[in-house]
Structures are given as structure tokens and as C-alpha cells.
Image 1 (cartoon, rainbow, N blue to C red):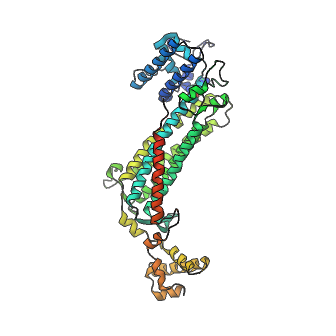
Image 2 (cartoon, rainbow, N blue to C red):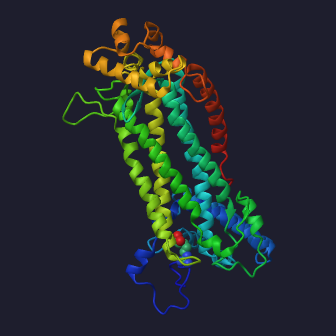
Image 3 (cartoon, protein in one colour):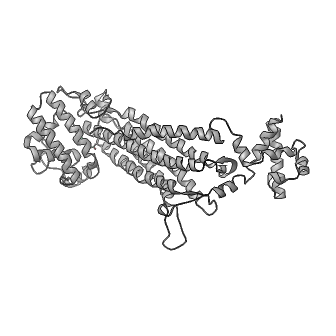
Length: 473
Ligand code: ARG
């Protein structure tokens, strides 16, 4: 090994690496963010090396304090990677050698960068899953807040982006929260599978030294050690699954983003964004654009791309470790960064937007949205739904022809459409009546929506607590 660089291999090579190889091989410019996890894993490894009799008590304490000091030096920027450091592990071993001389080289016993990187990426993602959950809970709370403030505001409910049936706006906002709650559940469930520790697997076969992988696992906050050393260093399911969850969060954000884009348009006018969460145009002074919502919509492409990129990298890889696996990090780092950018912006935008209740209320019955009420009124009078549907369809056609709303037809015209349409049908032709009639679990009536708000709140509090319990480092 050359003394100026801390290259972790080289004994059998007659020459150093070609510059093109070194450049291609280098990952320290992106894996540097794993420093705290590398330090934590090294400290745990040092302790088991001591128990295994590889390190004297004095050596252990020197290593532990140097690792701590090195971690701090990285944090302050006093210690940084050099151009010849291949990856985070190489750079930190150099840091130890600079501080401790040959003792710094003892820590490498019984471990490999293969089990190190697999461990550190899990640690990083377990922490950041909790970070993403916390940000997602904040967005949900913003949606719940708007939902609570507009609990009695009716709005057009759409299918095919056409007016379908009136709903409470609150119910619609909570539909987005339900999707995010499933994402939160997915993160928590993912964490259970991600909670096994690869350290101790070495390059792939485990170690001949009397290490204690269970002790390392416990110290790093894992539930236990991986059961198979070959799987431990080659498995990246945990990264792919994490990317699936962030891709799906991206898809859910894009649906909300798209709706906000529509709702802020002149044509809808349902909501107005706070100035702090909207942007202007460089040429059109009147413009107020929903860029956050559009960027959230756009970032879904990037998040899905990250998932695809990792899946394709993993496809067909022979066991155990292959260098291709170095390509696992940039997509997950990008997904974490994207979550950290988009979620707070969306939360702030949702929290501060003004809901134009009057516009929503006026639009709620438009497009003959109460026609289903007529059909169900006929059903309650004993008419088979097939016939009720036909009669109501004819009623709508008559209204379209006459340019009238359903309740505006005269008694004679109602009767002309069908004798079954007595003037009493007008009683069901109100938005408030239509909404109030929907009392079953999950419906848009005031009671089920209030019940939904209460359970959603409770579940969010639980996820909030989970999100703050980070992996102990
Ligand atoms: N930088 C490498 C990675 O991210 C670390 C493991 C390298 N292992 C090896 N055998 N070259 O995967």
C-alpha cells in the first residue's frame, strides 16, 4: 500500500490504478454522507474485535476515541476526502491511520467493505425513512387542518374529471391523506424487513474470527444479524423497496399536485395560493403560478426513474457482491433529497392556501350532479334501479334540452317525463340533503367524515412518534 494514499488493496498489483479506473471507481463524492454510519459501524466492530481478542483494552479505547474525533472532524469539515480516496471507507481508514499509525489498520480485521456498505446503507435508510415519515405526517396534518376548517363545505365530486356527485371538500382532502397513511404504513412495514444487520458477513463467507454479529446488530439498533452472509452482502431488496415507497409517494404527491394546479386555475377558482407559496412570471406581470404543485407532479418522474434504475442494476446479478451494487446509492440518496425538498413545500402550500368555499358551494350541484338522488328516490319508492336509471336519464335529457336545472322543471314536465316523478322528488334535489343522506362508513356525510377525521388524527400521531425514533448512532 502506498503511504500517501490509504488505498485498501494493492499488495498483489505491480502498478497503481490507471487514472480512468480511479475516476470510474470513485464513489466518495456521493457516499460521503454515510460518514456517521461508517463511524457507528466501526465503533461497534471495534468492540467485538476486543471481545474476540484481536484488540487490547487500551487499543480499543484509543480506536473508539479516535473514531469519535474523526466523526467530529468530518462534521466540521476539518477532515475531508482527498482526490485519491476511493470511497467513504477508504477515506475514514486514512483518517484513522493519520491519527493512530498502524493501530488504525487493525480495525479492518474480520470485515469487508461489502458488509460495511450493506450495513451503512441500511442504517442511513432506516434513519431517513423516519425523516421522510415525519415530513409526510406534516403534509397530512396540513391537509387535515384544511379538512377540519372546511368540514361543512360541499364541493363537486368528480369522475372522469366531470361533475359526478356532490361531496364534502373535507372528504376529498382526506382521500389524499388516506393514500399517504398507506405510504406511512409501508415505510413502517419496510423498516421491519430492513432491520437485520449484515456486519459480520465479511466479503461473503462470514469470519473465522470469533466475532459477535448479534452484538453488533444490537448496538446499531437492528433487530438481529442477517441469517445468511451471502445474502447479507448481495441483498439490495431493502433499497429497491424503499425506492418503491418513495416512487409511490411521488405518484400520490403528483395527484395532489395536479388537482391543486386545476383548482387554482381561473376555470376552477376553488383555491387561492398564499403569495409565499406561488411564483410569478418574468414576462407576464399578472401571473401567479402553482410551481410547487407542478414540481411535486414532475418529481414523480424522477422518483419512479430511481426505482427503475436500481431494479435494472440488480437484475441478473450473480451472488454475492458485485461492483454494480455501488450504483445503488445515488438513486436512494436522490429519493431522500427529493422527499426532503418536496414534502415541506407541499405542506406549507396546503396549510396556507385559501379555500374559496363560495365557489365550491355554487359548483357542487352543477352538471346535474343530483341526478343519482332522483334515481335512488325512485328506488326507495320500489322502482327497479334499471328503470329508475332510465327515467332519470330522460329527466336529464329534458333539462339539457330546456336549459334548466333538475329542480326547475314544472310539475307537469316532471310528470310528462314519468308519472312516477311526483313533485315530492324536489325534496332530494339539494346538495345538503344529498350529502346528509350518506351516513354509512366511509361515505361523504358529515358524521362519517367527522369519524374519519378522528381516526386519521390518531393514526398520524402514532406515525409522528415512530418518525422521531431514529436509529441510535
Ligand atoms: N464503494 C463500494 C460500494 O459502494 C464499497 C464496496 C466495495 N467493495 C469491493 N469489493 N470493491 O459498493
